[in-house]
Image 1 (tube, one colour):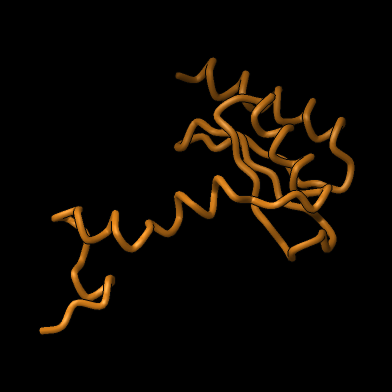
Image 2: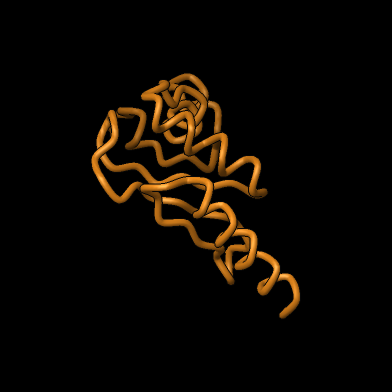
Length: 98
């Protein structure tokens, strides 16, 4: 476990050198790579994450270019019809009437 964290932090430092203007770190508990722009980017401040260094670098480049976050938005808010089919989804979230 310690070796994984040490390796993750080392990779995060290398990423930070390749991504000027971004604060980059490795989450000791999440075991994921994270980055946040130090200045404003298109679409406002966004937090990038990735399971691997490559995923994080791709996410950072996408954010920096102003590319839409369609995949992330789709995961964050389920479609109305999907929510109705999910018994675990709160009914009030889909506009059910009591």
